[in-house]
Image (cartoon, rainbow, N blue to C red; front, side):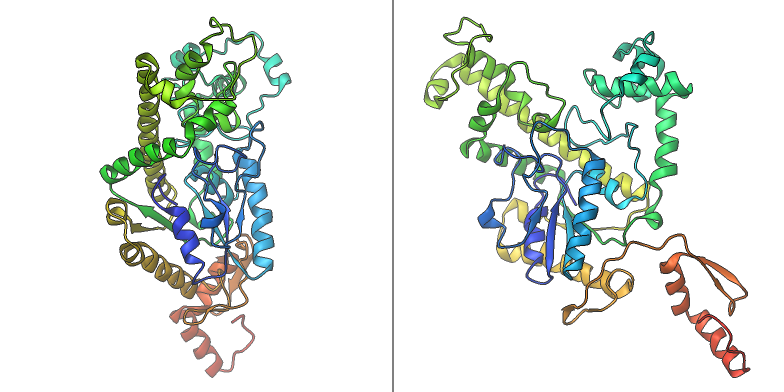
Length: 433
């Protein structure tokens, strides 16, 4: 886990030298085909033979929701573990990860996602026609929502009509303010760290904000040099919907004004006639004062919105710790982003991450039953947690334990083992041990 630009993908690939891993991409824009430069997909030659899943495999015209990600990732995890490999989920879209590891998902309700883009949406966003018809007399507008529930209105973009519809439908159908409803449902359904679908080892690649900001600005400039503008130019459509699919990505909408101005030259502003997008003359743009300024404004907006994304991602990680109790292990990449060297990266990021993973495996018998910290992973099997089977320990006065993990931990406890030992000496053996 970690903010954009922190080095998550690089770390995951480097860990393959120590563990038999396969990577599942959890970046909500990298799952789509296309815009490889803009979304910063890891090039094939940099993947170093490590299998990558859900990377550039989804059509850019469809909406790949958190529910879609969860369903796809669960199937992939089962396949990966069947090969005795370790699945590593890598990405900055934290609500994807939360949807995967949580046993519950608000499929039809909006949740504060806080991270994807300026107009991020969530879940099953297709509002059923019948629901809309039921409330046909209800005015679905942002001003309506702002008057009704300012807290909920502040969580979304004023132009995000789907979320506005969802929020107001919650109130129209239940009489409960959306902000209150979402807070209650989030706590009820998404639960805490002890109610996760899997036993997880969470690692966050972190860095100080001012260092990430500088790194992000530099990376955007490198993206421009690598053809970012050509990618956006290729998919540009003046009538595009920027709230769905790949066009939600930061770096698409920001160039809209510039591209409309550039492409309208010679067409008298008539976008109904075919647009010739076969060439993008950068030399001409940079030598034309008006267009040069528009392009620079667009680039500056990409940098600004990416820095804002970093802050939303960091806030989300803090919430996962404080609100949901996730045990997130942080590794500090500040020095590496400031002045990258292989030695610094290995010392500050890769090495500590390897030790964190080994420590998690040693402590958690359900995560990797046959793990040998010195020799690697043997017979890897990542099981879903058994949270609901009730176990009763007769040796400890009929103490009730919930789930296989809690039961195994209890049996290893000193007090339990002492009681069992005493009972054995007294000749009582008909006990669950």
